[in-house]
Length: 380
Image (cartoon, rainbow, N blue to C red; front, side):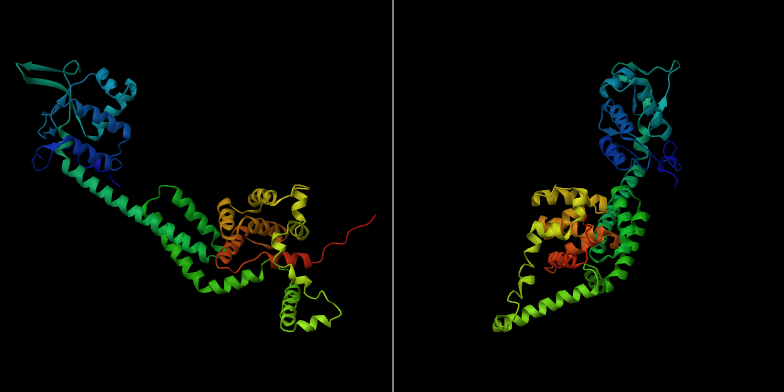
């Protein structure tokens, strides 16, 4: 795109009209907003500000040669807090090249003025009038830059909101898009990039949203519960417990007086560290003898999560949703079945969503692992 500085700055008004006078600080503020349009760095704007301080009046005239300042490089360097002279020369050359200021050189290229009484008869230095002459262009560019900044802010917020919506309904296939959106928001993208990402997120949400219930049931079926036969055994135990509660005498005549013992501790298993270690022996191969308290379990789950492909924000979200104990237990259970989980991060995120809805407990996960067949121990 052709830069604004290449269109008008430093050129004579084609209609021969002058723009009158303008407040020099208003012009500087507008130029700061439109700095990208004119390829100006903040240090170049600092040099322009220093030049403007040498012009005594606030109103900057537009007539050529009417706003000449002639400070020495040493004086400019003092007002720029000791900027090196080579750097100062580079930024002065940039202002001249863009056309914001123009040079009026003396025969020996020195900057000075000749006075007659109190009036300046002749001056050689930097002419600031082009800035006032092209004030309309500067103000228009500043308005365009402000509008573009506002549109970018709205688009960024839109992408952030859509990404969060997709997180709530996404399946494993959306991980790449979610990651791309996260990386895009960390940069300074242009409007087309943000608009394209917003459209992609909307399309993915439309694809995933109707299948949300199906996805939940599919994830529930994959909840580290082993084969269907193990689920059936757990369901049968639950039914048996219900029938026993309806007929308390049935247990009295039963040859197994401890008929409900297998389920009485179902809720306790999630808080019993020894039960968790029995169900999840894999963690002991990473940290033998390290789990002596729930604080140890929480710390080890935090260490294991990146190794399993679970990002720290996902683990933090799970801790907030289900508590540190349950989150640590879920991570250790997932470690046991890691080979069967395609995306551990998405899986733990889904468990956290179910926990917020009051539909999650680690007890079924522990039951399934405890009932799964273990390799026979070799006795020497």
